[in-house]
Image 1 (cartoon, helix red, strand yellow):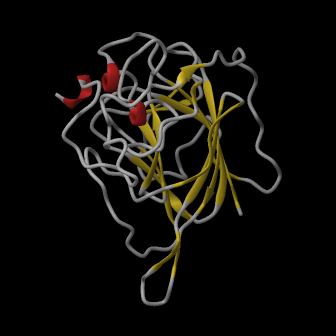
Image 2 (cartoon, rainbow, N blue to C red):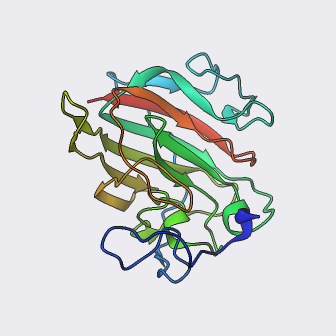
Length: 234
C-alpha cells in the first residue's frame, strides 16, 4: 500500500529535472522544534468563521464534533465549505491522532486542499520518515517544507496560509499560477511558493481554468481533528 512508501524512483520529474515527484532520494527538511502549544488565535473582525467548535453548518458533511474539534469521520468522505473562496488568508488548527498507528503516509494523513485543487499536506511527521514532498507543511507532490516544524502526535498545531489564486485569460490560458505562503506553529515553511499544478499523486498535472471554489479538508482514513478555522478573503 502506498501509505507505507518512503518515496519512489519511477515517477515523473518535476520542472528542472533534479527531483522526481515523491522522490525517495530527495533530502528531508531539517527538524526545527516549534514553540509549545499556545492559545487560540481568535478570528479578526472581518473574518469568515468556518468552524468555532460548535457547528458544522458551514460545511457540506456533518463530521462529528469531539471536544470542540471537528474530526474526520469514517464513511462521510472529505469535507468542503459551502462558500467559495479566491485569494485568502486562512487560519486553522489541527491535531493528528495521539495514538500512533502505521508509519510514513499512514500517520495522521489529511490535507488542506485550497479551491479543491491545491494541497497543503497534513501529516504526523514527528520523528517519522516519508518522502520529502509529502511531509507535513509540503505543497503535496511538489515542494517540501523549508523545515519540519511538527509538534508531537495529539498536540494542537496551527497553519496560517496566505493564498493567491491563479489567474486565467478569457481564452482559458494561464496568466499567473497560484502562490502560497505557509506558517506552521509560528515557523515559515513555504515562502511565496509557486504552485506548479493541481494536486496529483505520483504524477504531474496541469492547470485548467476555474474561479473561486470551496476549501476542502481531506478524509484519508485517519481521525485527524480540526478547530478554530477562519478565512479572510483578500
